[in-house]
Image (tube, rainbow, N blue to C red; front, top):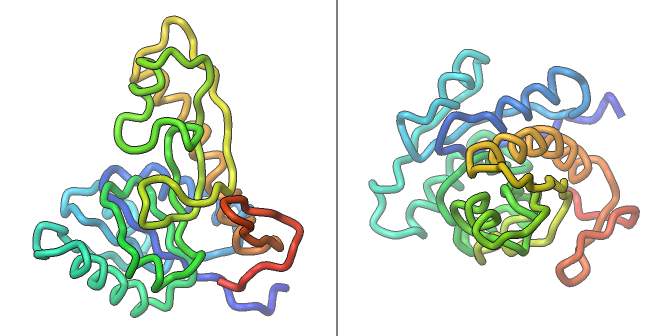
Amino acid sequence: MENRPVPQLGVLISGRGSNLAAILGGIDGGALRAAVAVVIANRPDAGGLELARRRGIATHVVPHRNYATRDAFDQALVARLRAHEVQLVCLAGFMRRLGADFCDAFPRAVLNIHPSLLPAFPGVDAQRQALEHGVRVTGATVHFVTPELDAGPIVQQAAVPIEDADTAETLSARILFQEHRIYPEAIRRVLEDDWRIVGRRVIFGTPRPRV
């Protein structure tokens, strides 16, 4: 196993990069056998860029506003990821939807982490949505990315009970703790375990496509 090439990850961010830090922590601690080959942000002020630079990781800023269409933006992202020979793309607080061309470029090899128990509360402000709907449990979900918003097959989830005194901020903090816990593990499972997708389900313990 140790003679196999180390899988190369591409991480897309828009903000502070806390899930990028969690992925790097999993690698550093030996729980995740992979390397982050490149970090790409759509915002030049994304805090995670500095984290990557301090680690000597290649970075690119690809402002989405510089492209007339989503397809053109997606193509720019694909070109940079392919230049770094990325095998698995991990969205880590990346606040742009990716279209069919992007997903087709990395089939079954794009993951995202979302702060709810999908399919409940897709999109932005998922924590506030959960509070406003009065649910007693929410959580975090790692899923494969499809062109549909937060609708891809689910790899891993973690539940977070909602407390009566919760605000969007306190709930977000507890969900984020679980995000940091499950994302490196989900990446490891996709890279190393046997799996296949049946309908919308990710079934582990069966032959998988290689990424």
